[in-house]
Amino acid sequence: MNLAEYRRAAREWLADNVRDGEDPRVFMARLHDAGYSGITWPLQWGGQGLTQAEERVFAEEAASCTLPTFMFSIGLGMCGPTLLDRGTDEQRARFVRPLLRGQEVWCQLFSEPGAGSDVAAVQTRAERDGDTWIADGQKVWTSVAERADWGLLLARTDPDVPKHKGLSMFVIDMRHPGVTVRPLRDMTGRAHFNEVFIDRVPIPDAHRVGAAGDGWSVAVTTLLHERLSISAGVGMSGGKDSADGFEALRAATDTSDPHVRDGLVELHLRSRALDLFNQRLAQETKAGIFPGARGSAAKLLLAELALFRADLATSLVGPAAVVDPALSDALALAPAMALGGGTNEIMRNIIGDRVLGLPPEPRLDKTVPFKELKVGTQE
Image (cartoon, rainbow, N blue to C red; front, side, top):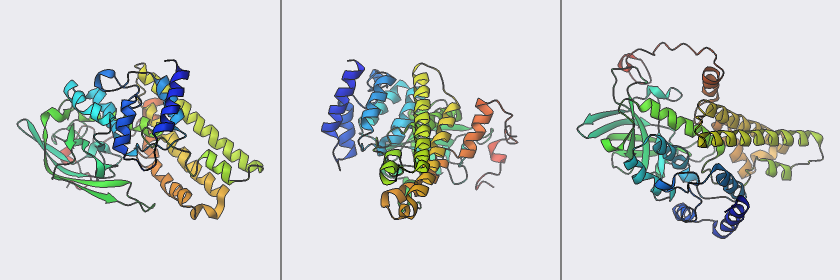
């Protein structure tokens, strides 16, 4: 099937199958069965084995709809790709296809109250007991944890070595009675995030992703996919233009005013530049070229775009922006993009250090055993 035929088939399928109020799991199963979930993922593990060209075509057609896929965004954008890159064949066979079909929801358990931007400072422990690990600790800012079946957990397994070397990655059962999820409400009034308490939860060693003590390397893989997926909007409902997006603002303002047109043109240029950058990174990844820290540049561009869009919407719409439910919600959520997935300041540090080759910031804890550090709540 050539791309024109693929586009026509995708458009017809979306017109026939996107229904308001439908159960997301039912929709995801139908999406997968139709060949539109995991478009570029390997056939062997339940994907479609196609190229970035087909994935881009489907995304373009889906942009006119609102797909009920947000609850799967962490699995599709971060956890699934990590399992494909770093998991075992047994893990891929067990977890990837159910993820793609919407049978199981995933979350990512990295940040902690004492380890936000400094991810390697996590204090959640996992201690080995034969072929099982016992996990204890607390995570925070965890999206979709309240609906998750599985989580990708970064835990400390060796406090006697420096913080980056004593970590391991696990797949944890979010339905275990030792896992407690509590919502965190933000200034939109909704609970976009959660805090998660882990109380002596057993994890089979077969659910360890990567070698014991190599969790930081696996986490870097996850963070790369996180920043790429956030900037590309993977699983983020497919989306009609948001209330503070280009089309919505053009319809709500007087475009005969040259200042309005200038603002809208700038918004379009920034959005288009980010789209093209994401396409380039996706094509390079498919070709085996590791994007590395440039994924942080994509994440930074998206955060700055969100803030620019919010400022522009406020200046164009005026006081009415705060009484319009959709627009006020979009404006309140915009600052979160400069925090979630790594702050703008951290992104700039990564870009300066690993992309531009600037001198890195001093790290006094690089060779100090973690148990000797004063981090978070650790005395």
